[in-house]
Length: 240
Image (cartoon, rainbow, N blue to C red):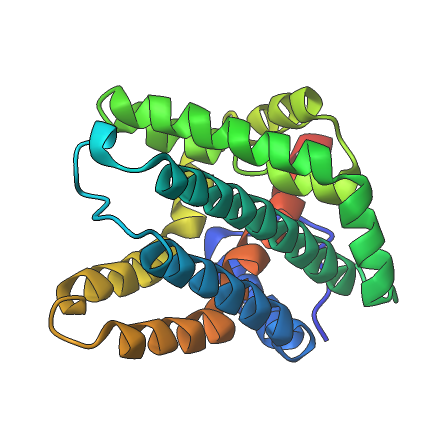
């Protein structure tokens, strides 16, 4: 049974712990990764099918109805995705802490912190996008610097600004360490994204969609387990 470390760990041990945590929690949360993947896929299909106009036309030529539909679907997708992100973090974190909390209780926790959760995800996205526009490297730096803001909000009930500041303090002085711990996961998932891009015009989109659902159902929680294992390690380092 996996348990969060109580002493500082090497990068290789964090990799092993991340995979061990994933294996120990997969059977308990796979249905959540399936739910979020299917939901987002359905919303993407709706966004492609419902509009009656070619969305590649100049903005001024797209009917207001189609613009409104896309705005609503984008908003619903963001809120749905944010909710499931919060629920996965809460569920996996409690499993790592061996807290016997029901799914209903975890859902109530996410609902009570939902406004802050959406706020921190939106704010982080804006910060990273602005950083990416500034020659990419600042965006990558910011993404890792504030990576633990979401678990701080949803797992520790921090406010948005306190979470940003605390995440920066945890990572500051450990940025390269944080970067290298996440490298296996980044390479793994971006390889799949790249394969998707190569095959999207060669294989029926429905087949790719089903393949993505299977993939993210099986491996989606890896991101959360790696982040939470590293989150625990950085907290230990700051307590030193």
